[in-house]
Amino acid sequence: MTRLVVLDGYTLNPGDNPWTELTALGELVVHERTAAADVVARSLGAEILLTNKTPLDARTLEQLPGLRGVCVLATGVNVVDVARATTLHIPICNVPAYSTQSTAQHTIALLLELTNRVGAHDRAVHEGGWVRSRDFSFTLAPLIELQGLTLGVVGFGSIGRAVAEIARALGMLVVAAGEPRPADPAFLRRMPLDELFRTADVVTLHCPLTEQTRGLVNAARLSTMRPSALLINAARGPLVDEAALADALGRGALAGAALDVLSQEPPSADNPLLTAPRCVITPHHAWATLAARRRAMQVSAQNVRSILDGAPQNQVNRP
Image 1: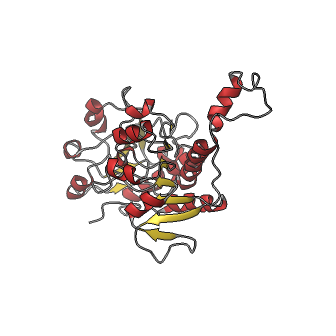
Image 2: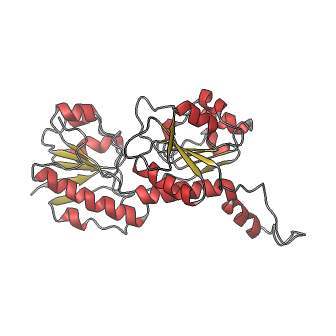
Image 3: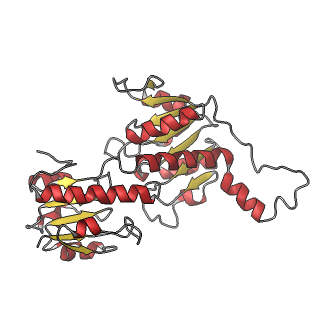
């Protein structure tokens, strides 16, 4: 019987998203989490490996001669040495677009937290702030209306476009980095990346992590942003130079930032953004609605089946 091994299944299925479809495809072994030292031992004998964030580097792949394919339980495949897998003729399949709506929704939630501070006001009310107020209404800081402001999207793929469409419904103008493309919606205006950082009221990141985009938001680009501007990152943590962002927030050079991702996850206690002012952080869960996780499970099962049938789907390393 085909042996399928899941190296880190807990985030996809913490108990509400059964592995039923995968169980039907072979002998399924699910590990909730796998330490680096245990990856090879747990992977030996597997024909299909499934991983979310457990790294599979070149050395690991080279020690698994019976491996027929790797299925990443997400869209990003930077946890796998794709180049080495290709030379070893191991197909790598991912799950594209499963979290588009969930991530777009969360991005807008982060934006609204920065502009309306719902969480902060809720905490203030529960701590007695409204009870003690002399007026019927109070605010902790000025609230921001989005109507007429410019949203700059870096990475206008499926998620970036979904965010843009919601922003349009809120009355925002939308620009995106890069050259115009035939599929661009009529409402979109394109501009160079550096011009976008200089002019947008809100910059939101939705691009993949590559060697070209690593550190894309650095001290130089942050220095060109308006002091009233906001930064949102629901893509990948290493897109942002965190020390530079913390410094900009600390100096008041930026009005606020909201991030669902950090360079190290979980973060170290000394990450400068954990103590930076006007910085909202959520624990990399924009993707994690039950609806999105069920789609990821369904497509992952289809990916496994396609590898076993000899015609991999959603393969990112086709020769």
